Length: 358
Ligand SMILES: C[S@@+](CC[C@H](N)C(=O)[O-])C[C@H]1O[C@@H](n2cnc3c(N)ncnc32)[C@H](O)[C@@H]1O
Image (cartoon, rainbow, N blue to C red; front, side, top):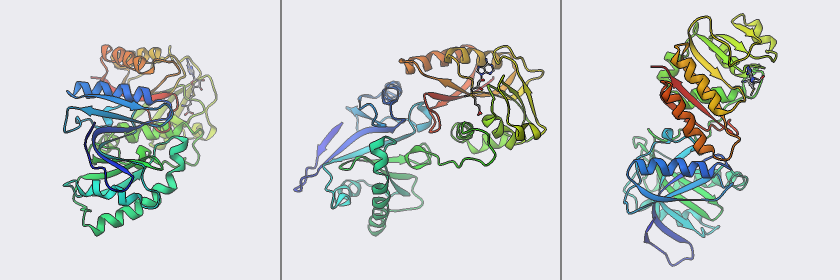
């Protein structure tokens, strides 16, 4: 919400604002707005979402509050990045954008550990990437000159360039915000992995688990089942961690993976397969109706066939947010604990979910 107007003599328009700004996959703005709105209401905040389809971002303006509700980026399924906007500048002068942004930044009683200038992942937003990079260096230099950088601070400054002449000025707590600019972890395609899908599981381990969990839960010698495994991108992530894997798919598995000696390939239906012994992980990338996958994973967790699961819910339908809620209901009713879900950068029309058994 706009609270106090500080319209200066020049013709840009700077306002103080209290809003949450989320970046998401272009085309998923409405789901991101629903996600954000539902959590904000749950946390006692009132507001409304402003968004445009294809823009790759959502603004949730809070009404009647001096502060935005405490929502962590991890709590949201469809947001890649979430920041608390305290200002917005429109009609930024192209010859001196920083000159228009600095008064809002200097009005904050905050010193910053770092500053990122980001644009959304839309076609228009990607064109702004070079400008963001150039402005970022100039911003850091300006902040250092004014002694507004403090490496001990836990707050990061974010400038979101929504267009060449509109910017959000925002803050994020480093403990509860995405640790990658734009919310996009830049992963290199691993040499030898048989499909690009491999990056989805790598990103899922990075985003949905923390450092300690990765260390504790992804140990050499563990056992996994991969449903819908062909050609083996997800299996590759497990084998790379020396996890023995039963790969279920009628399709072929990559020869090099089979040569690792720790993959057993079974050409059977993933919905009928029962593991010979309980495994540490079930991973599943089968293209199927999301509620069928939720029921399947709930059965595995409920029967004690796996301790943890990482799986995709494909969302080609219209009411994607409702479908996700329905799937969470199925999983919870089946005894799944600790549900975590995100639409990852490497996900397309789908989300990735982590769940564990009690
Ligand atoms: C998106 S691909 C999986 C890609 C794989 N995760 C990778 O990283 O290379 C989906 C796979 O699910 C398999 N699939 C679909 N329905 C299945 C079923 N009922 N049982 C076993 N596999 C199935 C398909 O054969 C296909 O290979």
